[in-house]
View 1 (tube, rainbow, N blue to C red):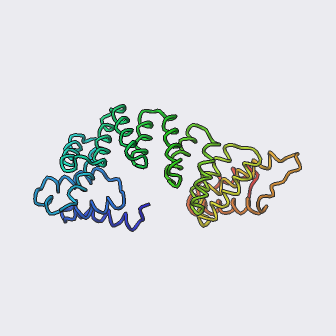
View 2: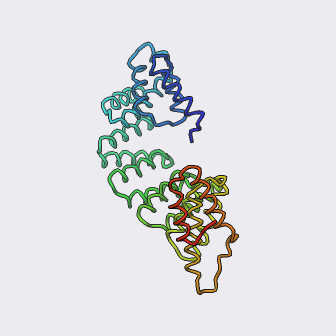
View 3: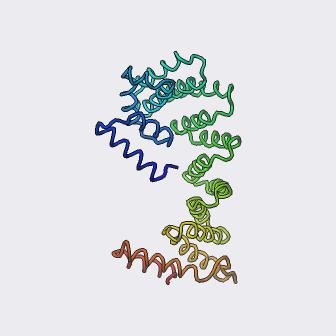
Length: 303
């Protein structure tokens, strides 16, 4: 993840280049290091170097790294002729390179030649079944074609090999949520929480899924994870505060007449959550405070 300091540094370099102060190569190096997706700028600044023989020759071996970077940016901007020229230069320099072969397959994908791209990726995977980028490109092809079931299948196969890829687990979870396959999404978020227990986003998403599934046990667990979200975010997550209020209301309705109580957390928690929400609304949305107050009363949760 790009930090604010790194993003600020990248923006500063971008402004410098745009205003004629130089630093195009430094910008491109930093963008590549941070994996920042600023394809239009990378394409513009990269071509300004590649089209100048003096600047290009001064890069030494990094010239070919720049060709690759510009090729990917060009495909992202759908400047396919530029991408083709860059890949041709790389192919001439590295005729047997699998890395260049991957770029050729990506170009087929950018052109919409799905079958040819899939065949190229399959061939590359035969030589190197542990190429993460190619596995992810197959998922991208499936999603681009609207074949969500295939995307799920490829993601699951990918995660059998690369189980520690948090981004893949999160993408799979979001696909499941979009398909209302909440139990499967819950499993993905459980994996994320196990591997990164201090990320409040995963606790919040897991709580949302459990709340959507409903049922007394799921609601009680959702309430716990909304609480942990608040704890991990320093009490600054309004969505989690609302979640506690909603869970408390739903639990009280389900438990009514069953002689069951919500023993998962302190009885003070709902009132503390509502008080925190009222404080936030007073500070940042005072005109909507009356709406919040009436909503909390309807939920029978108040400070």
